[in-house]
Amino acid sequence: MHHALFASLAVVAIVASAQATTMMPVQKNCPIGGEKYESFEIMSTSQFGMRLDLRPNGPAAYLPWDRCPNGFVVWKDAKEFTPEEIAKLTSVVASEEYQRMRKEHATAYLVVHLQRALGVSEADLAWLILKAAWEAEDVKEDLRQCYLAEAEPAMIARARSRTSHDEDWWSASLVAAEIERQRGRFAEALTLLAALPVNELKADDVKRAVIEQIKAHANRRNPRPADFERS
Image 1 (cartoon, one colour):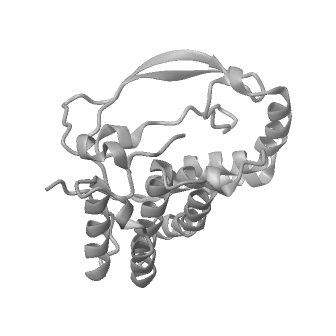
Image 2 (cartoon, rainbow, N blue to C red):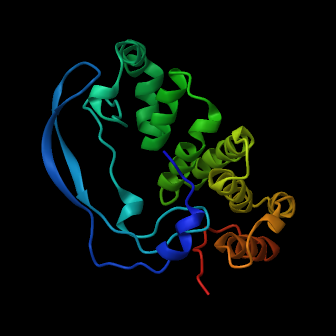
């Protein structure tokens, strides 16, 4: 999943539509176990702006996951799973740990667990861990905070994995600071912001506004998620 989104944030923030998410029912076979089940295909959705942590506002923030009856979360096309992945994931899904996790964790975090079993790095899981925090937001605050605590070092690792200060580097670096703010770690958030090479940005770059807005919330000691405010 590519999340170099600050480049388009200025446009996204002013796009509005009355369109909700529409889905079409389809029959599928679960790649783990082969059981047939009724699922869906997303035909359309809409977004009304974006938050400082890059969560979209509107129906796009609540797209459902494709889940098999056995609890497996199908995060990519079923045909894309290799025989080796299916063999490894079959034992993971059947485990008592995973079946317990189904009752306790956000769906996105189940995908994190499954991808960790496949050896996916924390840097590559950073956005997925953050998505788990979004899913937990309206359900269980202590769980959201646990996910945020995992997402922050993963986001830092993602930024460090980049070989240049490209859009992905900036997205990961800025969101790492925003995660710290949402954890109530205001000094740490400000430290991360202060270390950013702002001089590399053009005067009208939207990332400058993002930095100032995160900084303002941190200085007010406000840990609540916040929308990007277009001036």
